[in-house]
Image (cartoon, rainbow over all chains, first blue to last red; front, side, top):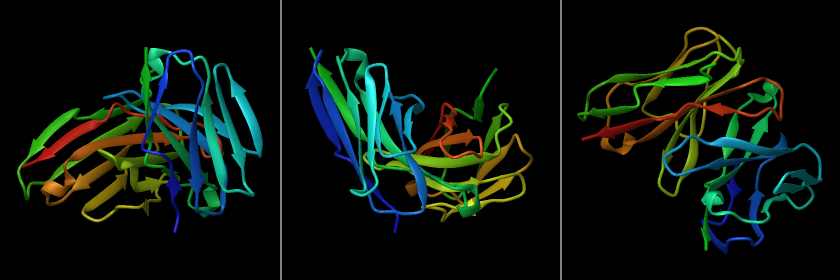
Length: 112
Length: 113
């Protein structure tokens, strides 16, 4: 089957660094994406890793290791507004259907 | 530029009633998706369409049908609503290229009583 697993909840304090992990049991996809969703809102795209290694976008970084079937999202200098749910996702090639599937999400709570 | 538009935003149905959720995108995207979101369950793919004229089942297709009316529009139909279909439904679209981001509508909050 195809599945992505994430911790259900993570708590951290303002100004700290937090890492949200994603492990997957699927194949045939190309890259790992991350999305953010604030309570009651629509998910929005954060980052994409096509290759193994670290991708940095401002305070957010994302990492992928295909050999370990593992990735993570790193949030630095946490702010209260970072309290949200974070989802990892994989997208399959068009000639393999092109579907986009998500993990169950990690709810991040940032405390003062 | 509206992006992805879903209608309605809220809906209450009685068990056994039918309805169609509408979704339209104005970004000329090839791929469109329907998801449902339940507490603690993340976003589960119901159906998707890789291009106009094609649709495929996702992870939880039972009880639903879809129509890719044209490149812009992708509708989701509940033929006989059940309380288990109470959920928040999201439509999304993206370009065909792998790695491009998906854009989501604001969701439809459906309650089946």
